[in-house]
Image (cartoon, rainbow, N blue to C red):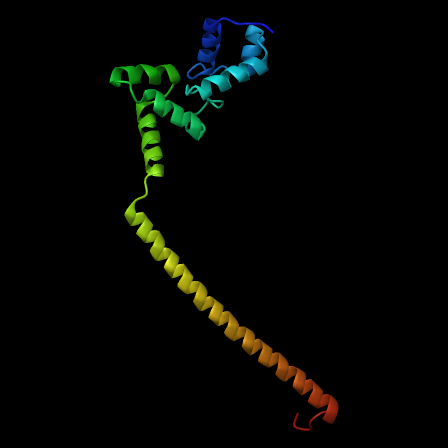
Amino acid sequence: MRRYPQEFKDSLIQKMMPPNAVSIPHLVKETGVSDVTLYKWRKEYNEKGIAVPADSSDPENWSAGDKLAVIVETMPLNEAQLSEYCRSRGLYAEQIEQWKQAALTGFQKHPQTVKQNNREHKKDQKKIRQLESELKRKEKALAETAALLVLSKKCQAIWGETEED
């Protein structure tokens, strides 16, 4: 098993990140490092909280985990550092802010939203009860009609055709 220096690993991971976004198959041809090793390194960096997205073509298509890793990485940065970070990754500060707001919104439960959901649930339950009672009424009417049809056929079989027709 071949050992690679940490600087070499870091440089290859940097190449995988935006804006370079060199694909792993291309890096395999370029460096001779196996694809399994490169995937393993990328996974290790992702587990450390460093965003190395698999789909670096469009940051909006990144996984939620990659976006969260970027948010965590950028939290302690000041404006200048954030700008540098964004340039090196091919991102915009506004994107990161939107991702942060989306994450925060996902964690929060607004009381108004909960109340609205409860009201809608009650409306739905009322509608379900109404439809069930209407269904029962129609089933009874259908059963009664079927019984009358059977009786009329039996009467015709016993007494024959009526002359009222």
